[in-house]
Amino acid sequence: MRVALELEVPSEVAQIERVVARVVATCADLQVPERQRQFNVPLALTEALSNAILYGNAERADRHVTVRAGMADHALVLEVADEGPGFDLDACTRDPTAPENLEREDGRGLFLMRRLMDRVERYNAAGNVVRMVLELP
Amino acid sequence: MSFTIAKSGDVTVVEVEGQLIVGNRQELKQRVLEELDHGERHFLIDFSRTGYIDSSGLGVLVSLSKKIRELGGELRLANLNDDLRTLFELTKLDTLFQIADSRERALESF
Image (cartoon, chains in turn red, purple):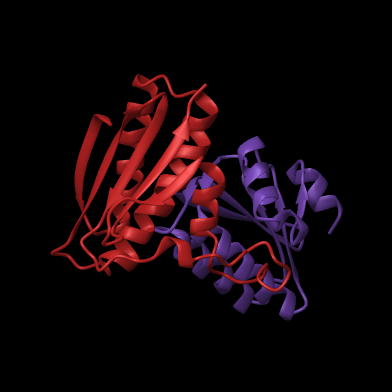
């Protein structure tokens, strides 16, 4: 990946809007189309950052989240790394749109990441780096 | 995110400005629950000035809607832009909420 932006931020949800704004600005430089820049990227990235801060790092002040944005083979690549124990993305398969889950308050984050990006994958063996790929026209 | 609360007849109208996301959704939840405690039962959330809503924000809307319904009231939504409509369709929450094109239409149908 050709990295265009790398940020390391404290594990605080209050940081999310600022980080998303920086990445969206970078996406404009990378010629990411407006719809993806204004909808897919901010939402998928917010979900990945929430997971990293709340679950990966358990909001611990001594842990950080690292975000990298760049291009690889005509695709936008976003990586979010935390300092937690990692988790198995493939094990999270609950469908929040199923009638029995529709009124649940939780369980839509990973689903949205998968629907808004072309690929969402665990990038390292530990499972604490999530890589999201969005193919560009 | 900031929000304003106003009354239109017996409907409490909440206007959300900015993003409704994990860092701020509890403020909205708390404020609507306070109105519910004060006896209000009809709620309309106007998203005309909202950027995007994440899964936590959606979760708060689902939870508020359930709570309001349990107490005999109703929560409706209005003025979703194309992206927000897509979001509600993707998550099938468009089947859970009454969504109006405008604040006026939403208010008429209460």
